[in-house]
Length: 269
Image (tube, rainbow, N blue to C red; front, side, top):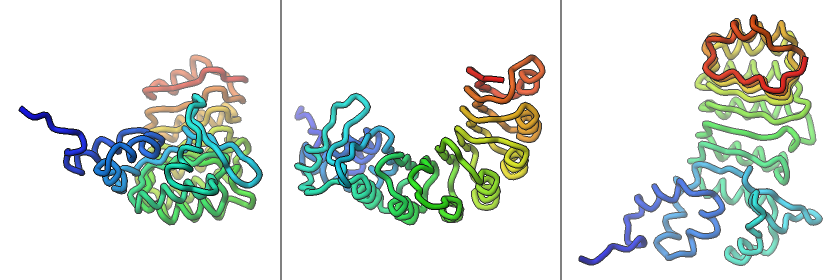
């Protein structure tokens, strides 16, 4: 009995496999095996998940001339050779892959380095089906509140939003906008935030049905944490690890006893 070859598999089967491999493998390995594999990688469904956290961009002047994974293995010269790219930049790479997704991208994790404000606006316009988004406010040179509010208005299907910033401001306005536009949101992460009276009230008022809330490395006074615990009754996962402003005691643990996963390691009073 003759054995079937991988390259002879129907394209939809190949796509179903390739959409599960890492982004670098999909870029640098799979397309160069054979013509049928290359054709399958052009299917937008292969690019539903764009995770740039696994790629670090190393700057040289205004160009990003190489990238590598977290183990320092990959070099971008292979990418440039294979795709005949003369000048490589993080922004052009992000745009290229977003265009490959053709509006099918549902998960997008943008890098803190190499992604400019203009690129951010581009990808948001091109990814109307986003379910999960993670980005850093460090990529904005101007006031980022209007940009994020515009993002939230466009991404009505968001289910999980992560905003990375060591000094995130305007959190109450951002959360209020989320409450109005993102009815399917079940997870929100804002590490390194300041959670004061207004911020806690905004979370309770606008995200009362939130399941996952990640506030690690934030500043939260005890009374505002208590307010969140009282107000967000559907919390399944709460992460306040390495936060400051309160200490863990039996009363707080009892109040959080309904939460399946309550992370509080490294809390500093």
